[in-house]
Image 1 (cartoon, rainbow, N blue to C red):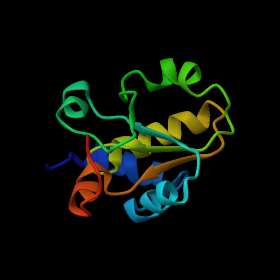
Image 2: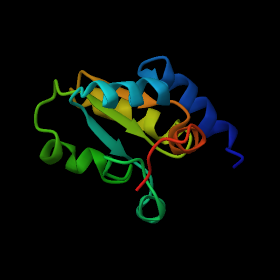
Image 3: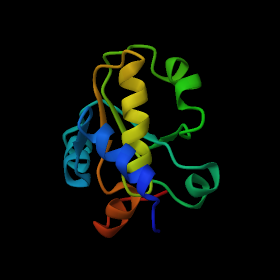
Image 4: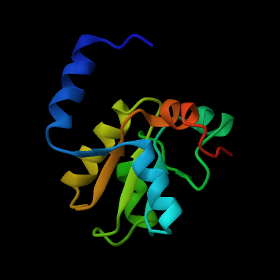
Length: 121
């Protein structure tokens, strides 16, 4: 997918303020049994098609509205992903602005997860 330049500029600005990790790091956290909230911020139809095993769905359009009900402790560890890592970066920035202190965006998103052959539902 080709993204517009204004969107890409915004994402690059946001990436300076947030933490990102690789799909390999997320899978290693699962394998170690580390507790964290794994949240898919894609659209409803994207999540319905497939998603990373163990992920919950809170679309980018509603995450700010609903995150406090799903993750009431703002110090809990949260890993967000989307299709390629752009929308999750924007969502991570928004959650940090809301006071969430341990939010990470998974770089590469579900595409990188699929390419790595990691479990899907």
